[in-house]
Length: 205
Image 1 (cartoon, one colour):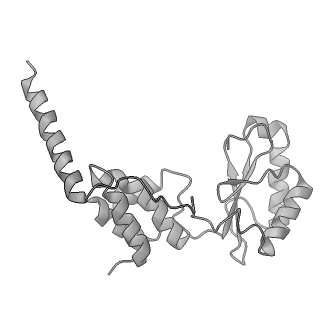
Image 2 (cartoon, rainbow, N blue to C red; image 1 turned 90 degrees about the horizontal axis):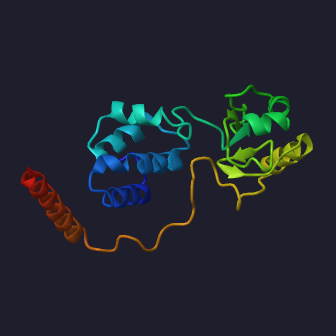
């Protein structure tokens, strides 16, 4: 029985079909699983392993390497405050400490209501607006304590839903074009390319 919902499972199978080797689809499949559950459950990782022809241990090892994936439940909003050099000089540490006080949790924890998880981030690549803050991988341009307080209040009241979806959703726009050839044709062309590659390798002196 599939852990992934039917529509997520269908998207997962479509993603796998885009790659010459199923294991190459592991990262986008992990993002899909996290979109469904908010984090990577053991059941989801088992299913990703089945879809990619790998083991659950390989999937977990891959997921644990990347900061964007969470192996434990997190809040609806994952708030990241950058403390790298540009943000550090602009008050990143002070803003992070303020965030801890406002949310009532230390870095790495989740509020009791399950709404917020607080993270300290390395460079978030928005150095012209330091200190940089992201919520669910979206830039919010919240550079002062007052702006941070207003953001938290707005999110608690259910605001910014158009701008900031629940954690795990990387993109809400689905592709309507892309690989449109029949799967059988794709499989045949991949097999032909593989044979040609092998023939070229054998022809080398």
